[in-house]
Image (cartoon, rainbow, N blue to C red):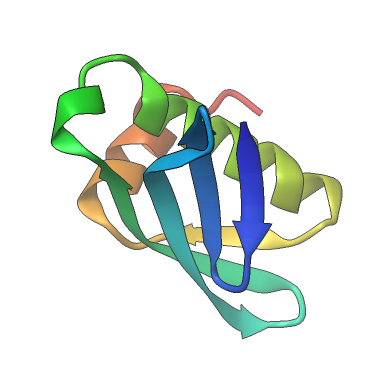
Length: 83
């Protein structure tokens, strides 16, 4: 389950926050992804990828551009983004 709270896209399992995408607003039409984090016991399950897909879909539907600042998001952008 996803939730957007302030400057985070939060991923929850059974109401527990297991990961997040931290972003910052650059202006009204742009954000930067500054950090992607998944708790250690939940890593390797594709959660980070799912969070970035959700973040990408959420902001691009609102015509907000995304800067990929952290290393994980830069790699995801090169590997998975096809839009």
